[in-house]
Amino acid sequence: MKALGFAAYSGMGKTTLLEQLIAALRERGQRVSTVKHAHHDVDIDIPGKDSWRHRQAGAAEVLLVCDKRLALVREFDAEQELDVHAMLAELRSDVDWVLIEGFKHGDLPKVEIWRAPDPASGKPAKPLRFPDDPHVVALATDDVAALSEQPPAHIAVLDLNQPAQMADWMLANAARFEYRGDNA
Image (cartoon, rainbow, N blue to C red; front, side, top):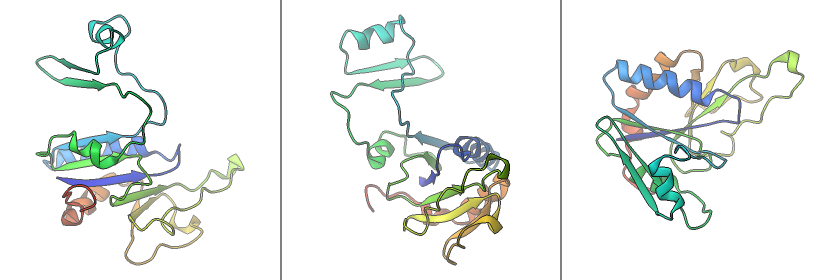
């Protein structure tokens, strides 16, 4: 499988881009999984349902299954620093791509997403990550001219508004993103 991260500040459109990339990769015959890092308490279970009741009773893990899908809910004994490699190990290895949203400090290759600020907002531009992150392999932006500095030649510049072209770039560079395990 190939693994590629997508890192950006909140509000830059990571989720929207990933939705579009998943569709574009699927159109090209690729199987795609995702890992999403949430910065808040998240619960996919429904209070009062049996699986929720199992967790409330103290189950460390609940595997909820039906004929179309499964969902694993695992309770940690205490808050912990999540490791992207441990999360990837939880996934099926027979997919073509794993797109990772978040884990911006991880050591996997990643695409930085950067949008130019709306002039009407009066907000300053968010700082760029690529100058300080050696794992950024591409910069997806909606306005190259608005960048405070241009990326070096080894960092691809992608049009944030052209997810089909981005998917083509991913496929053309697929060998770079082959995942071999923790820090490999």
